[in-house]
Amino acid sequence: MLDKIALFLLIVGGLNWGLVGIFEFDLVAFLFGSSTSLLSRIVYIVIAACALWCISLYFKEHSLIKAED
Image (cartoon, rainbow, N blue to C red; front, side):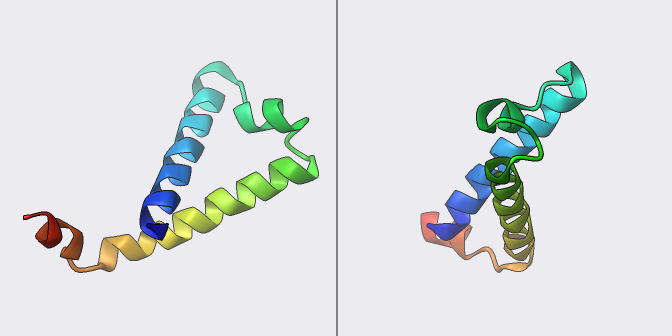
């Protein structure tokens, strides 16, 4: 379950960076005040932690795929 939550938040973060790159619109900063507000920084840190967690998924055996077969 933690893997799925981390992956979901990582996708949200990736979409946010896509918005920044294409439209120069930071959704996190928009929702929480500014990119330097405490809440925005917490969101950025949580998403970064999820990215680090998802690195471990790359090295896991394919147990999730085997469980679905």
